[in-house]
Length: 216
Image 1 (cartoon, helix red, strand yellow):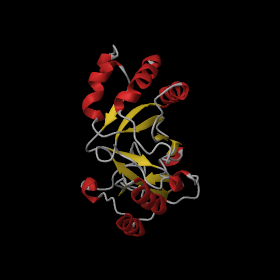
Image 2 (cartoon, helix red, strand yellow):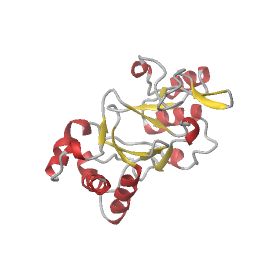
Image 3 (cartoon, rainbow, N blue to C red):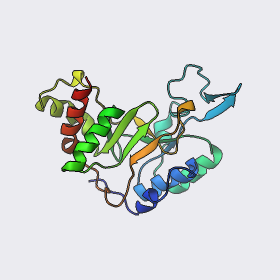
Image 4 (tube, helix red, strand yellow):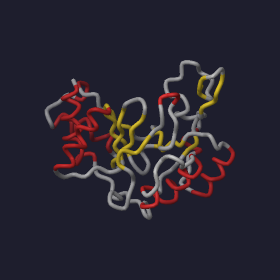
């Protein structure tokens, strides 16, 4: 199982006022997550643009900045501080398939699932929401391989649900990353000592799949 140690510090402060370099170091040091600096936002002509230079960028300031980003990711807080000193405005990316996988659903489905989880077990682990109106639930690694069969076992065809799983080779943008002009990534459920043990995908898939089915 994957756990955080000392994660109360991550949860004890709001996202506002916490700059990316500090957040990245804390994720590495307190949550034991690998982190990677991504793209950033640049003001040009009175509007924010992604540092990648693509005017049609779908995730401005919130995606990898280089092709070998996965190899650059580090679990060392010392290395993270050095990387963000060189690129202080870079977004904070968390590679998936290492310490955790991610189950991604529409934001409305995510809130519905969380409401169901509040009334019964299981408790979710950390959950992040982004301005793309998607909610991402952190679960134990290995979810990418098992979720399709879990969904079928509940009576749904995976292709009929707006539910995706991010495993090896994927990433999520973490707070306080800014996503274009639409706002910042934020924690819906912060990483804390109380949720330090990540849930298995099998523990969350029923409320998540049900909520996605309601969205169809």
